[in-house]
Length: 203
Image 1 (tube, one colour):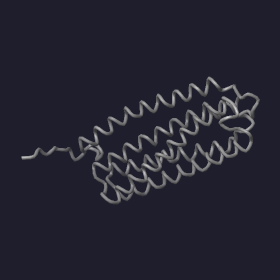
Image 2 (tube, rainbow, N blue to C red):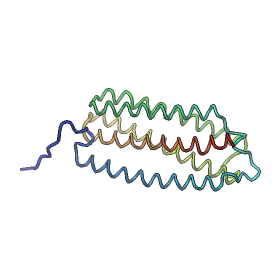
Image 3 (cartoon, rainbow, N blue to C red):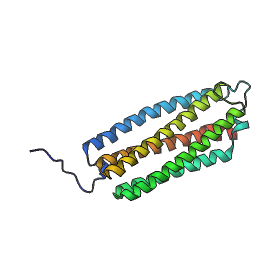
Image 4 (cartoon, rainbow, N blue to C red):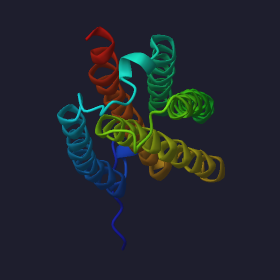
């Protein structure tokens, strides 16, 4: 006779399967590697922070308004992502599929402003090849933007799975894991916002 795992009905849906629990545990290890990656990029940026080599300075190009809009969009997306997890815990599929698309729209808005910012900087003479500072800036901010793009694609695929399979332990675990990833990107952006933009604007 096949063994059937007994699950406490009060256990969150994403933890009701052994695979889900292992995947969530494994993802925490993955985030550790991501922390190491961004720590290296931040360290490189701060080593090169004053090496503009005669190119435009960040004080000349950084604009508070655009950075504040990007910050508002991404932090609001973290809030809506949290609401999606709240609906997940209520096992409300409709609620999950309401808040996740809003999260993605906010993330797309963030990316739109970041792309506009990058294009503006290039037109003003600041690119990867302009100086060590701008190389470090574009790699750091661009790596974060790439992660946001991957997160949007990933969550979109998860929503498609929910439409097809419903809110079951397997899809619930994926929603929860993707929310950890999204919140991680928000935390990284807070460090970029304070350590890259605000620091140069107040110097």
